[in-house]
Length: 92
Image (cartoon, rainbow, N blue to C red; front, side, top):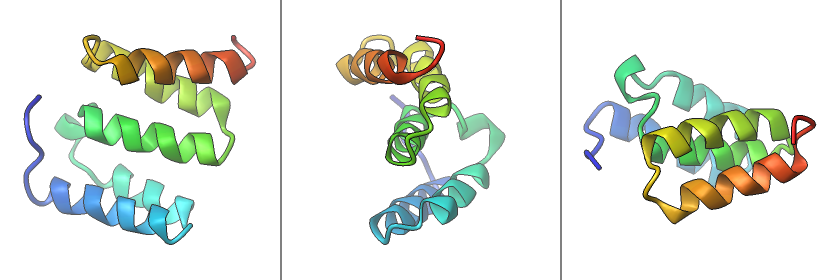
């Protein structure tokens, strides 16, 4: 997996910081500012999934997990995140 570089790395770290402070909306705002080419980076998708799970937004979590599964199909986390969200989403 390719590594994120500045400024997208800094935005990801800022999102993690906001999440740690309990401000999930601010965390999502930071993630939205990441460049279009890195929106589908597995680290970005996984953090987005975590935020949506904490918000109990199962449909958004399923969408993030589905993208994660496409981008990182060899990762066990991709499959686990997808199954977890699918079980709880209305579409599941």
